[in-house]
Image (cartoon, rainbow, N blue to C red; front, side, top):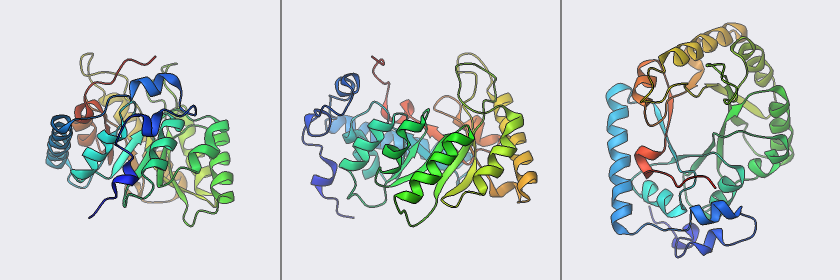
Length: 269
């Protein structure tokens, strides 16, 4: 597949991030561009993670989380065969997606907290494939309305985000509300309920995230019952760099891996 260099805009950092639309801290954080050795490392990391995923579930979807990383890192992963990329900030996703809009097969996943006033900008991003963080009806309503107004030919895939750990710092609806929110989304003309999503409570150093994964699986089962659909028709987005293999063993269909592929991120300004 031939890729136009113009589509990636990777000749210099300023080509994509010097504009005033990008928050200064993001511009600084993404100001370094990969050299050949860094690109080779990203490609090798992508292959290594694929191999680890395949040993547990060869059909699972790997989402490479590229937040606070330059578009050249995305290109390196793309050149290795990766197609699904996750971003946490609406403006960063919109900028990267616009710069790479002519690149065939890219799929952008939004995995960060979403506010109503950012929905239009997000929905206008080229090749937006999925929103993983729908935690309340207000966001679902806004996504449905704006996606329809923009005239997209197919519905937007969305996940219900569930706060499985009960932490105040985590987004998501409470587990008991997941079936009702799933039902509300399933009735939207311009949305397609893909499944349920969570962020595990524990880091690799602190312990076992399987309780969160088990809660999400129970929410998936309850939602499937409410919808009257087979359990396996609803996906599970769970697991990150430190616990994606454990998440896969608990039934994850989508895992979100960032630092293991792209390396440590700069501190958030």
